View (tube, rainbow, N blue to C red):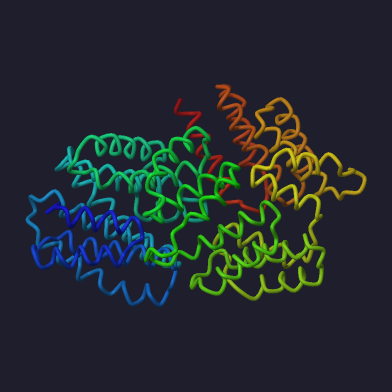
Length: 473
């Protein structure tokens, strides 16, 4: 069942080189037409196409094939360790796709089906390491469900934690590194491990480890390149990310990944190269068929115009925020709120925010120190202290970071922006690292108790995970 065609097809799929993968699959159809890896691999390609493109028409046309592929897998004997594994994975993939398009009930049913199948497979074949990969992903997904979707877990009655899932992925990765039968799964596991770490609590040491594992594949694997760029951007390594963007080989027939154009725009905006940023955002807006990051992109284009002192163009592009996209994710919700409020950001504070996100800490600090408090509104004063805290934190000056974060909480808890909540989250992170569980717990709870409406889901999820980590240790 697992042979060179399967391994090469799998590798090409995870590299987003789908045409090359299909050549391997077609070769396998000729040699071993009954190999059930064939429908599984074809399904994996379709799932990634839908997930990356967020094209609802493509989703509708492809989803019809799912039941046919599952029926092909069902032809396997019940004694096969791959039978429930494949069916469980296919269900999980299309659960994820359904959730992305707002089909929550269907998504919940498919998650439940995947969970039951994989738990059963794990009981019957406990030494079958691929079980740990998908169960790890499932347990992490369950542990990250935000408050607004907790009803899904109540409906299907399944349990899992991020820590549990991370342990399963680490176990699977260690086995796959030393087992030639499963070495083709290494990149997949590394991707899951990387995305979880980057989106929960970016760790510079893990980022170094991740990049060291990925760098040899940059020239042939767009998914790994994306993961490395994401890791660099989450850790203030903007110049490295821009350098990596420049190495992407446009002659390789990768599946179009327009979200990378959005990220390229982010990188340029973070070092204040406004015209280049606008070009990348427009490229994303023209080509991307989905609805996420559309409002955010229009806001970022507006910011670029404002940084170029063109207030009229800023206001024009903020109107586009109201005209296009949806509010499914925090970034788009924040853009929509800003557009409705009609506020024009303080240009110097905006520069500091962008420079900080890019890792240009000294430049951002210099601008902040030149801003006079008596020229700022209450919200702007809170933001200034918050950004000074973030900079001090990133420069490992934890004493100043604690002072600025506490000042942010004291003055910012009465405004709807996210500054006070995220300051409390960051204080929880600091005290957790210092093994001060009492203070860490206190600040994570402060974060959860605050009333704010920006980036609410992502901040609260991180605070809840922080509490779980502290309570489990």
